[in-house]
Image (cartoon, rainbow, N blue to C red):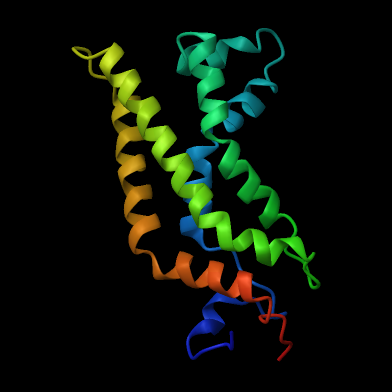
Length: 162
């Protein structure tokens, strides 16, 4: 795939692909269990205190971690974006959008079960997560930036210095 007019917004000055902010947002949403886990490790006294604030039981936390596994694979792929890409990265970039959709569907099932278990009660945190989940749907479905980023990454012809 050749670079097209307008593709310069996806490249850094060195000719490397730049990760879109929409992808960072989507990954942060799907990896929120891992982010909460990492932040909880910084607590000195009671490391489980933060996790108990977000998750009422251990099963919810484990389910949130399992929902984030496909997104974690995409994050690992993004860490390999260097001047010379490993051979598996362009191949993996072809299935990366499908992995994000799998995380989105699994996250929707998890959110539906959380809302159903606490139905009469309203919580702003859950409402914010549901709103972010809907924004992720819109981004995955309509974002030209995400689509073009994965096309360029899958093509492995963006490594043009210029």
